[in-house]
Image (cartoon, rainbow, N blue to C red; front, side):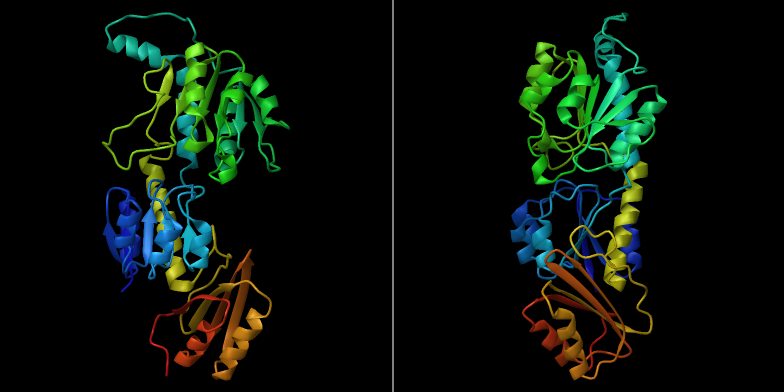
Length: 405
């Protein structure tokens, strides 16, 4: 029986989906450190995590039974994707399911910061009636600068225009501008014209240290800054200095370089206690609607992979969309992508009398994925011969019935 370990309070719907497909599911509320994860993954075939658990090369090398990892979030920078691929472990995430939740949080924070609602709220809680228009502005007519024009950035662009804002964006990739948004050729150009700057880049290593003292200094005096992307893209000390100097009038930060493992843990940051600064505990995508959608999406991706070998939207393996294995035996062969592998696979199967009904091949960088459907069970010696190939990474047979001798 396949076994799944789901960490960090993934949605209960994930448990239902996997259990309904014959998977034994174990859940834990928090994240695990490297050694804890190594121990916990013994005998585990499916791992579900969110953003806190780090799946390192050491973890992957130790997890001999692991077949797939589901990242129940957008980002996958917490997983060593290359090592996972070389171990034959498929990784799936939820690139779209919580984008609306992040966008709505950004819109709410933009309005809150431009109206200085944080300070008005604090004053009233302290018993002070601070009725004034000082420092408060409408968002209508303001220019929103979006750094990173992906799934979140584009949705934010559309909603911001509906509020009467002008939108400019910068992305290193060529992106189609939606509505009246304008693509700028450099981040410096964006910083110069934007009243509000918001970052929505992905977690690739090249984005580390993207925003620091130099970038804050180039922003318009009195501008507002938001980071709802990754903690390592921004220098928190530089933001603190910009807030205290008055150059930046407000900020909202949802992600941090070091984050506590679980709810209730102590949080430390140089951004605590600053005026007109909203700090949230990495909850951009944490709405009930988003978590349910993520849970359903990722669990179904993992289910499809173990049942049919489908790798559609896998972030580290070649993508193949495959139908049900009803009435056939399917051999899924992950291998290093070198010339001649497909011919070698077919010659090996032919040598053991295996009749091929259908076959698909896809490659992604140094990884190849050959899926072969046959009209009968597969000889054990044929599988052993495939495993002996220099390019071999992993073989799975579906349905997982005992091959013939």
